[in-house]
Image 1 (cartoon, rainbow, N blue to C red):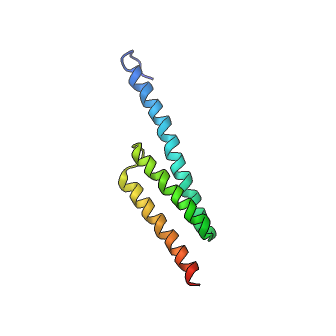
Image 2: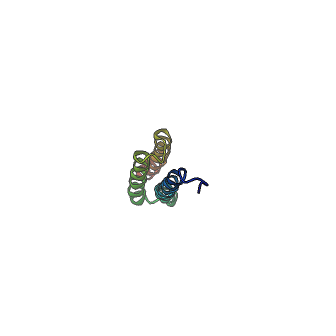
Image 3: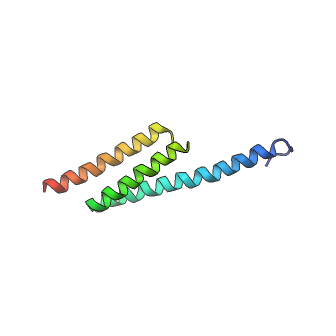
Length: 93
């Protein structure tokens, strides 16, 4: 907290934003981790559903201003590439 009266309201707002951003960022990271674990397990059906959920949560984080759009695009691209590699490997064998 700030030492002056005029600085207390902005510092309170900043703390509220920090807490909210942390929640949104955590949900996005968790969904991304779950999708990566599904890819590592080799389950194609679970991978497609969790990857879609991870992409959605990253898009929400971008909309709310927590992630930069290019960071989300990079993460989504890498995740999709891994998921596609898994699905093509299982369909060809």
